Length: 255
Image (tube, rainbow, N blue to C red; front, side, top):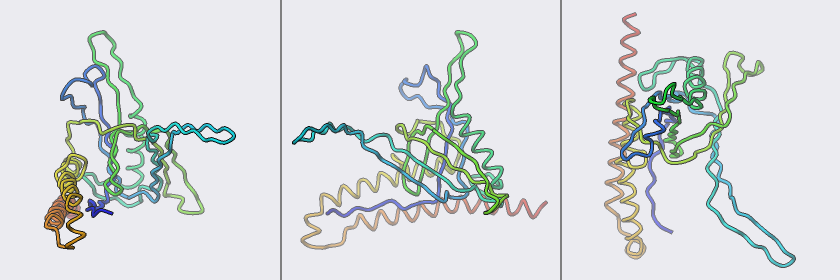
C-alpha cells in the first residue's frame, strides 16, 4: 500500500453553461463562451455517483466468457432544496426560490438549445454544460437526462425540492472564464490547477520513495509543503467569499 495525499474537500458545486461554435469547436486553442454560472448556495441533501460495467458475458455448460470494456459514463444524481433565505455566493444574493428558477431556466433548459443560422454565413452554436464538484472532486462535461421539481405539504409546503440526473460525457470544455470565484477554484483545485498538479507530483514522489519510507519510516518534506499550499489556497477562497459578504452587509446597512 502506498502513501497518498488527498486534496481537501470544498463545499462548492457549480454548473457552467457554455456556448460552443460548432464549426470552430475542433480548431486548435478554441475556447467556448461562458454564458452562465450557477453555484449551489445550499449543498444537495443527496449526491450519488454511479459507475456501471459494460462487459458482455456469455455462458456455456462449463465455461464463462467475458468481453471486457471500459466503464460506462458516470451517472450523477443530485437532490435537495435550494434553501429559503437569501444567501450570498460569487457575487449573487438570492433566495432559494429565485435560485431554483435560475437553475431550471438558465441551466436545464438552455443546455438543450441549438442555434441554427438563418443564412449560410451565420455560425451554428450548441449549448453545453461543465460540471464542477469540489467536494467529491468530480469534473466533466454534463448532459442532463432529467430534472424534477416537487413539493410536499407534510414537510415544508413553501420549500420546493428538486432532483436532477445527468451523465458526465467527457472532459471539461475549455472556456473563456469570467466568473472570478469559479476561475480561482479551477486554477487551484480543478484538474490542471496549481494545487492539483502539486499534489500529483507529491504523490508521484511518495510512490517512488515508498520502499525507503517503509524501511526508515522517515518524514517526507513534500507532505508539509503540500499541506501549506492547500492552507494558503483555502484562505484565499474563504477570503474572497468573506469580502463579498462584507460588501453586501454594508449595502444592506445603507438601505
